[in-house]
Length: 475
Figure 1: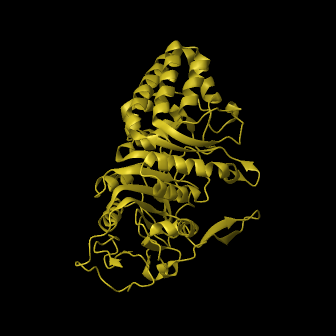
Figure 2: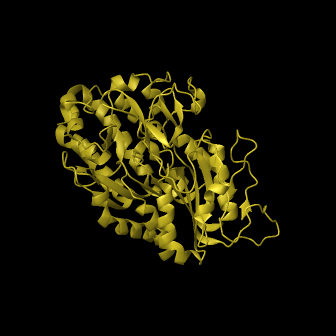
Figure 3: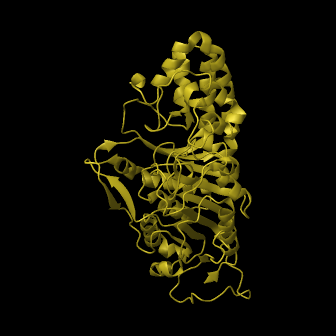
């Protein structure tokens, strides 16, 4: 067992986290022995980081059960770092009364506990609670803490290549989160405060239900995620797997694509029982080539996807896509030209352009996230503009190079679509200039994204006066 020397919880100065194997034969009190042999170098080390409630326990069990015979080889090593969620959430009844509903499903540690360990063939999961730290007030979003955790993984679990798996709730671009925290006038409300709003279902890159704010709950934004990786000993991963919702959007990917060779994302709400993580680990054992490992994962989960996207008869659409980041920049080039063309045409073809927005596929019914290629195609169709037709064809070619593998689920056909790509934000000028609870506007937050800066897409959003999202015009 190894004791982490770095202080992980920066504002809890007396505490450290432990990277442990939880082996039945290890002594939990043993400090790092500098005379120990160098750690065995693996082909891949997979680092799973997140805020998982108690649902991560099931995934750990399944990875352990499925991969235990393979773990002895040491070719693929797996580290977990996550914070357990709350035990209860408030639930309002029809009569207006509020009750406490128990939502915690954790088995190996308690609400608010943080655990950091390597899953090995001799891991004793029952020992996790003994080595955990109860720190619900610690912010998962801190870049320094993220980079420190990554550094420990690299030091203690060296590998030829590293895979980062982000597990928890995501929300794509979120105007209430994706803005530098140091510039926001509001405060984070520590546990015990009752003035914060209830958390939204999805938020930012990784939301933390323990930290309510003046508008929802606190979250890691894409800037903090990118900073934590950039300042770590692994500034570039072989792959980053967003095992959370709505992260397949141009605005988020534009700030993280250069931190990995590959990304795995979904532009929809991600319905998952954890099998994608399990199958990816199995694929890494079976293949030295990452693309082959990821494709094996996609084929393995495909038969079960229609079941997990059928929520008691409520049918969802879904996708999981493998992205090759070296092909990203061509997408920005096409989007920049589409934005300029739309601004040119809008004074004379407003009705045609508005119609395209009403017809285009929306990836999530709670956010204005439009499938980018479908929107471009609808624009070309409704305007009849040959320039936009050419841009739609260019965008298709660029996506074909960027999205190198995928699995799709088409269960909800309210707006039929033949293929998914990534989502792009589409709001009107009124929303663009609307101020958030924090005091800054939607546009001020949006224009901080690399995608907006490199494409001028925000210029199109503040020109557009039509809003199809959230009303009946898209029926």
